[in-house]
Length: 153
Image: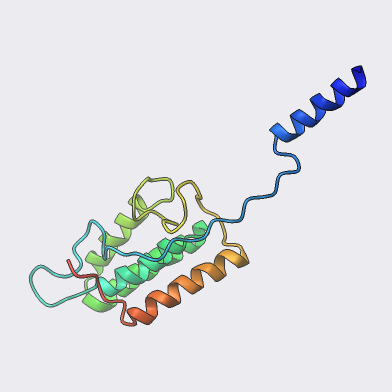
């Protein structure tokens, strides 16, 4: 009898702790969304400069997420793209400072690093299956929007 009770308790603890339970499937990335330049203007209010495609490309990187180094690279690419489109280094540097200070993965915003995944992922390299899922979703978006134009507002 004592042995049966001990075995029952061991089995109960094992089940309660999740031992023997199947590992949940990795979360899939949500379909890509963009709001253009988020809380920054998408284009010049006076003049013809339009840098929104730089922001959409940046959003693709932020949506996908990954490592801190990948975020640094995405932010540097945004700065370079905006400077190239506008010739305005000060504007590009201001946008760079904004994304560096307000785009981290720990902010609960729609434009944080890795926003395609559930909140709480932080800086984490994508696994091969996550990479494939993100590639598939990005291909769907790019097929419908090859110029990475800004969404209509």
